[in-house]
Image 1 (tube, one colour):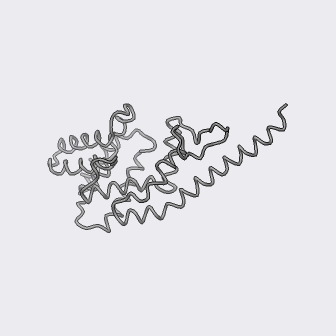
Image 2 (cartoon, rainbow, N blue to C red; image 1 turned 180 degrees about the horizontal axis):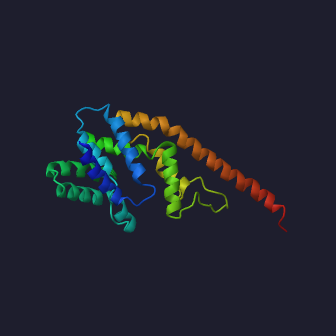
Image 3 (cartoon, helix red, strand yellow; image 1 turned 30 degrees about the vertical axis):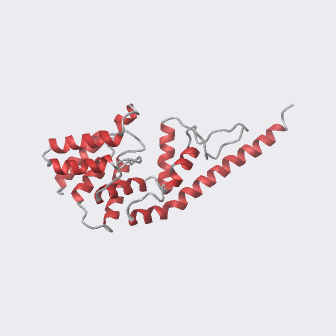
Length: 225
């Protein structure tokens, strides 16, 4: 891929990004992670991989405005149109589209090509470790969701089994369960290196919150008639 082509694709990506938790820096991290993972794989089409990484989240704005939309589906269609409109072959555009459509993988249509698997792993890697915690907190704040929910006993819930959205709920439902869902060995190894950072942050944050409520309620009761 020459620099002019890269800039063309990059500029289109930049024109589509609106979400703070899925901003252009997320795109670059996914791209850079993908290139690292790809070094351990064979027969990788780097033009497809780079293009798919740059364009994988261009459907986010449509999903944000209407949650019924799947950003992977929307993004795949937008990428295909953009690429064919700009002189790329339909075969190339279709390959890129298939990578984008399957990068979200929700039980159906898992990634199949090596490029799609690398994109999937690179994207999930950005939800692991300290970065995953930071991005989740940013997203939760942006949509007005709390750090934790309060149970019937008046104490903060640790998030396990919660149905009300919060950071603690998201950690237990999603973040801590990502680490066995990678397709490439390199992706899995990179994620494993990050796992303890997220676990320690969640554990420390919950311990601080629980302690504040437990001790604070006990002290407050002394001042109540």
